[in-house]
Each structure stands twice: as C-alpha cells, then as structure tokens.
Image (cartoon, rainbow, N blue to C red):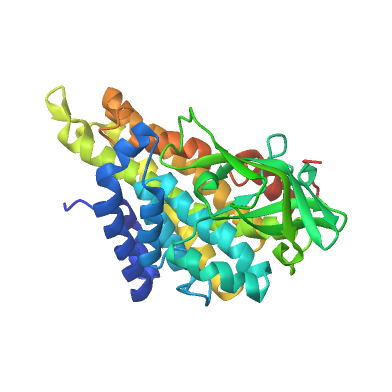
Length: 389
C-alpha cells in the first residue's frame, strides 16, 4: 500500500481553491529552501537575520496579506491561515514575525488608524522595509490587560506616554510600535515611531523557546507624541482584543504546521530506524501513536479550514477564535511530545526539528491568551457565566 501524508487521509486539498493551494505551495517552497536549512543554527545561537527575512516575506506578499489596499495582498482568510501553517512548519518564530507584523501592528493601523497613519506606515510594513511591534502585555498584566499601568496624559496638544511593555515580539528591531495605554478617555492606542525620544527597548535573553525570534521589553519614559499619533477609530479594550483575535486565527493554523512537521519527522524516522531487527514503524505501539497523532492533526485542520471559511463569509465570533486556538495549540504540543518519544534520545537534538518545535509550542500554548483563559472563554460561551473575574 502506498504511504499517505497525514493530511492526505482527510483529502484536505479538496477543501481548498486552486489559488489557496498555490499560495500554500509558494510559502512551503520558501520555508523549505530559505528557512529549514538554517533554522537549527538560528535557534541554537538565538540569532537570525530578521530584517532580511522580513523583506523576503514582504516580497512574497506575506506581510499583512489578508488586508486590503496600501500595498497589501488582500488574500482571503484561508490563504492567510495556510501561509501561517507553512511558516510555522519552518519555525514558530518565523510565523510570529509575520503574525505580529500583519495581524497585530498592521491590522491595528488598518482597522483603527487615520488615513494619514495608514499611508505613512502600511506600504512600508507590507514590503518589510519597516518592522512593527504591538505593545499590550506588561510585566504584571498579561491575561488581564485591563489592569495595564502604562498611561497616556495630555500635555497641551500633545500626548505623553509612560510605562513598560513586556514579551514584545520584534520590539528591539521595530521602526514603529502600536502601544496601548490608559488615558482619561479610556484605553487608547498610539502609533509610536521607535526613534521617538524616551522610547527604548531591552532584548530578553536566556529564552529556551522562540529563540529564532526577537523578544523585547519596551520602556516609555516621557514619550511625547502629537495628537495625530493616537489611533482615532477605537476606544477601550475592544481595540487590542480585536487585533489579538486576528493573530489567534493565524495561530489556529500555524500550530498545525509545527505539529505536521513533527509527525512527518516521526513517521520517516520510524520507518528507517530499526530495533529488534525490524523498523520501529512495524510495532503496533508505534503505529498507534502515529495514527492517534494523525487523527488529531487532521481534525484540527478541518476545524481551522471551517473557521477560515466562516471568517471569509460571515466573520468569526471571539469565542470561536478561542475554540480554534485552544484546541489546536493543545493538540500541536501533544503531537510534538509524542513525536519526540518515537525518536528517543535523537529527539532532543537539533539534528531533528521536534525538540525545537516542542519548546516553541510551549510559548505558543501560552501567548495571545493562555490555555486557561481560552478554556474560560469557551466555558462562558456555554454557561453565560464569566468565571475569571
């Protein structure tokens, strides 16, 4: 019997349009030729050519690809999800670069910004010439952004920002930061050029996850901005939470890319690795592991494509985004762990991608809404009772 790839069990391609498959294949080729040959070294050293990769992603139309106009590709949601999946099959850090750029920083400006802000930043960000970051999380306020301490105060016709943001992807390499702050008018967003006096960053070192990604602390000390720096078209937490739903949608697909790469690695290894004079794949326990992982991966993909099509036709509710992120981040991490067990000691080396994916997924499992918070969002949807306040 001919071997089948995991998604072939579900005939996933029949759910996709020709254009969606073409976009997926272009991104897959980019990852195979540009990312995978060097990602192990980038992960080990904790350094990677972020600006170069950003420009290459921009040239492929991947930055803000689901946005319309201003140099953005204007693709549908499913195409964006498939791109996120292929990027994360390379590494979660590469998908995070594209996700933070397009679904957080660019989306905030596109959805809530003035025409002047859009014209100034979006074309440059779409090309990768300018990198953006998204300043919401603080050292003491992750799951509860309403407790943020960063403040914006009026001083004449200007705004002055003071505060600290933490765990900010792209922070130390960004030309622009979208920063959320508490003001007398509620929580508001500001478009902050990172060369503004009083704005500084600190790279977060000693990470054992997302090492091929720039993670930073943002420090704002008397950052003076003109009135025009404020995002005019949103007020309150619905602004940043709307951006996070966009990014979580990409994670819904992206995590499956890491899981698929782990599973395919485990299948290939089990066929070629022999123990007791037979390949590992010939043992029933191994086949059970592989079959169970393939089922969870396929079900996660069916869920993601379904939600992608809903997003393209009628939009997704926030709790549906939580369902997708909660389910797929969880199964991806479990698939990575189980795949690692098939490789034994070889599974903990960077010669194979599994331990790298596994470490990365530990962060993806937590960021942009922890597993616990998304569980409670789903629980609230089912009961009508909010349990986390």
